[in-house]
Length: 99
Image (cartoon, rainbow, N blue to C red; front, side, top):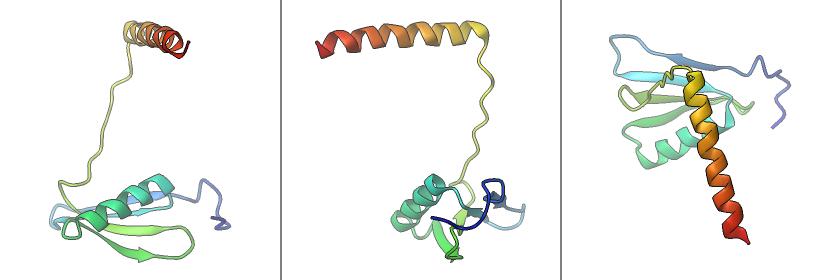
């Protein structure tokens, strides 16, 4: 969808305070909009679409406890090497099974 906005202008904003039981999520991100829409349709008491500006931005209200942030520590060099070796092993197995 063409909105006339640059990628830098297409933001995701998450608002919440300590008093309200709701989190407000306003986003242009297509994947997040799709996931939030599906969640809102499946669980209307937990999440609802509150605004669609028709320019690509949707805003949802989600109950606290249903929306999360995941912080991941950077991989150590050892872990990167181990993950690479594991991936190489599975690629070899996949190549064998294709033959």
